[in-house]
Amino acid sequence: MTWDRVGRLGISFLWQTCNLFFSVWGVRRQRGRRATVLICMISAIYGIFLLSHAGNMLPYHTALWRSSHKILTGAVTRLPVISIGNTLYLENANPQDGTLNNTPKPLQPNVVYITLRTKRSKPANIRGTVKPKKRKKYYGRTWAGTMQDLEKKTERKWTGGNEIPSALHKNLISQRVARQSAIRIYSGNAPPWFTREDISAMRVLADTPINQIKQVPSSQLHLLLIENNQTLYKQSQVTQSGRIACPELCGVIKQPLDMSEVFAFHLDRVLGLNRTLPSVSRKLEFVHDGLPCPVILWDSSLLPSDNNTHSSVKLMWGTYQQMLRYKCWMNGKAPKPDMGCTEIHHQEWCKMALFDFLLQVYTRLDRHCCGFKPRKEDSCAQEGLHLKCNNPENIYLTHIIQRRHDPRHLVFIDNKGFFDRSEENLDFKLLDGIQEFPESAISVLKSHRLREKLLQSFFLDKIYWESQGGRQGIEKLIDVVERRAQILLTYMNAHGIRVIPMND
Image (cartoon, rainbow, N blue to C red):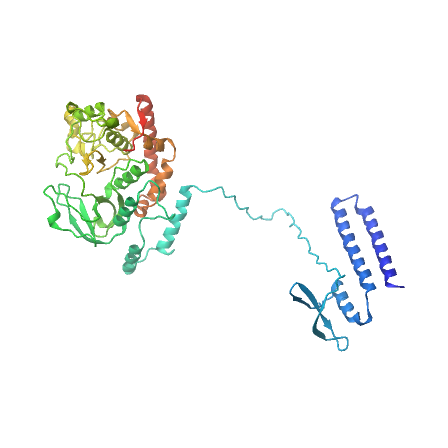
């Protein structure tokens, strides 16, 4: 019987076997039918392989045939394969001693090599087994969540994952503090409401080594002057009015209870008012027992202030209300001499009223506490100023400051806000006579993004962030400002206050 006859009989047998499988399993299970077809196809290919190999079998290929037969039938012995370029070669076996010959021989072109990969079956779903948790899809993160991660990274980077070092490592800590800035900017760019000058001033106030600290010769004895290594304090620079001409960037240290100055600076920048001086928080071991305290940029260009009103221009409440009615310098119109206008633009009062109401800063426009019920610890109650509210027209405004080169704009100083004042005791006298508000600030209040922007802004100041109890403590302060903002918007609708662009 020839090999062709054997191959034809084998193929006929396999085909009958396939028909039998179809008749038994094809009706019951569709998946079984697919498996049967796959087995039949493989068997047919295997039969073709036997037929083609049998027709080309030569006597001296007996050893090679046996080796390849062992490979296809699952034997352990494997035939070595050599790859040269894009051509595969088999190593010839020596028919005399059974050893392998290193002379490469091309594979037979009519031989089909098949690699079967077993399909991985799914694991059985057994009751009681614990399935792995599926990873939640990422839909983006809010800025608050990002800040928490950055805060944890910063803390790990700061402490190295260990507890606070002992007093023996103070020198090492001071060196690390000097290298690491307290102003945290991770994205490469600061928030858009800060200018380059703001960031530069904040870094100097927060990180610059201190050379000397001297008391400022003025009526406010608690103010101190910070001088870095590049700024030398000279007694000859002290003017008769008590002002100091600082040749470089200097700072003023205030009390730890005045930390609202830092909040006021960030709120001013977020609202787009840009009327406060840069302020940061800093810890100084030799000042205030190392407690965090606000450090405010010293601006020698401010006009000298009066010792009684601490203002560069004297204004009474009655004159101030008259200026609001005339809208001095509004739309570029010069006021008449009999209007009693100063060089201050009308829009500056609108910005100040908005800013002071959100923080409830009463020391500028309502120093005598005539618009709310003061507490015993308030300065107006201690000094008995609230008893003079019967004649408010003759009450002076305080902390009205201008610059020498720019007297038309105001500079907001001494921005001590009060967050513990109840909503039933807010000072609405700060809004008397105001008929316009800046569009940029009101748009922020209406956009419901005030919280997001303030959190992003406060995160830059690491010392302030930690001194207020992290995000949880700062969110409480923002809650107060947001509620006051809603009250302000309601007040605007009730009194018909307009919103106009105030880019000047």
